Each structure stands twice: as C-alpha cells, then as structure tokens.
Image (cartoon, rainbow, N blue to C red; front, side, top):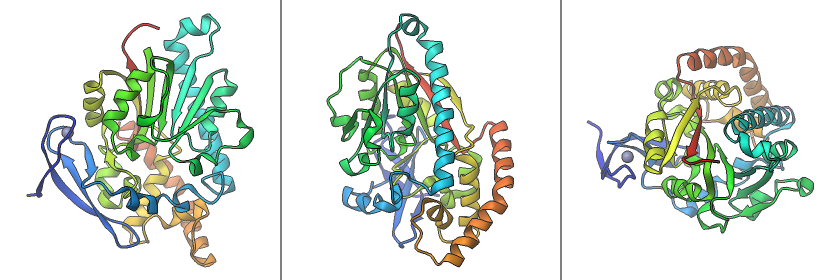
Length: 328
Ligand SMILES: [Zn+2]
C-alpha cells in the first residue's frame, strides 16, 4: 500500500498517495504524490523558490536566445509555425464575427520563451503580447521583435480583464506553482467566448505509465504538477472553462520523449542526450557523438511508436482547447 500524505487539492480532497521519490542527476530527490480523488500528480512538498532557481539556470534555457543548437532550433521554428497555423484555424472558427469586422484579435502567450510563436501570430495579423517570469529569461526575445512583453508571474501582472480573444500556454502550465489560481486569472482576462490553449505532458499516457520515474516529461523538479486528460478536465470544469477538444499528437514532443525515456531506462544518465541537443552538455566529445548517434539510430522507431500511441489515444503530451462561455 502506497503511503498517504496530507495535501489540500482544488478538487476538495485532503490527502494524496506517495507515488515515487524522483531522483535527479545531482543526487537530489523529490517526492511525487497523486491526489486520491482527481488523480492529479504533484511534487509535494513543492521545492522552494531557491531550489527551483538552481534548476532554471542556463541548463534549462540553453546558452543563447535559442533553447537548442542550430538544426534543432530550426526544427522548433517549423513546429512553432505549425502551432500558429493550428491556433489561427481555431480562432477563425470560433471568432468568425471579429475577423469579419476586420478587428485584430488579441492574443496573450504566457511564458512566451524566445517569442517565436508570438511573432508567427503577429505576422498572421494578431495583436500579440507575451509574459516571461524574469527579465533575464525575457532577454531571449530578439530586440527588434516588436512584441510587448510583461515580466513577472501572470498572477501578479496588471492586465486588462475581459480583453483577450485567446490565451496560450505552451508547456508552461506544469511549471506553475498555482495552476488553479492561474486559471481563475485567465478566466478574468479572457473575453466571453475567448479560447484557452494549454499544451503539457499527458500523465495518463502510455509513455508515462511505461517509463515511470524515467519518463522524460516528468522533468523533475521543474514540473510541479502533472495532469492527464481526466484530471485536467476536473480542474477546467471547477474554473468554469468549457473543454472543447484535446489532441495528443505532437511530432515535436512525443518521439523525443519516447527516445530519451528509453535511454534513461537503459541506465544512461538522466536526459544526457537532451543536454547535447540544447548545447549545455559538458561531456567529452566522444560521449556527445555517441549520444547523438543513438538518437539518430532510434529516431525512426520513436516516430513510429509515437504514431501508434497517438492512434491509441494515448500520446505522451496533450494540447487542450477550452473556452470561456459566452458570445463573441
Ligand atoms: Zn485532487
């Protein structure tokens, strides 16, 4: 029987079960618990700000404006273009009236990274803004980007209520200390009928179950919460956001997640190949080349595997579209 611990959850439950102690390469470990009622996962107790700051140093963001080395950064740009196309399609479907009136729809990207997605949306005619946690992380946005950035936690930023047609969080939600309060704030910022796009790891996926603590998308200790389709639906419903659709297909996230989780499970140091792709690896050249060869060798199998997972409705990450009820 897994040990029970006290944890107040937004779903009303007062206890959770200890699932695992998740170990990171420097030897530290973090207790992962699962709510007994809504099944959301959480690091509990959550790491302090000081501890988290250590794990968000350059190793996370990469050495330069781009999070990854050259060819991978180019691939990320292509994926961001695909994301922009997908979001644009949904907004045109749901806000047909605004587009007809020639008004520029307003979009806010929370945790906008290097601003790549926002620039793609700006070029598609959107009035865009972004947020980043710190001035340092906001510096990755090119100076000529013409994208307004608000620095700070969304919960403390002073933004106009009922003003955004869309709010997006690309692999940001799982990093939040207070996802429940963040959704309340998002609800206030959205116009009636406004859309929320949330992309994050899927803790109910085949990869999550199969790889356990070796799963790449656990990303300890930066991911403070872990959702599956069901546990996210519970939270969105509590916060009055209506679930419209979910996709668990991502060529950007899922094949690499499989590949790196496999290497982690085979006993390679956790996420070592990933640090080579980000350009933050301090390993010897021979080790880096060996890791890159393994990645190249396993890539076709990982892509194939991800397609099968997705067809089975169990892709390793999910993108959810939700809506604030009301008319445009
Ligand atoms: Zn719960």
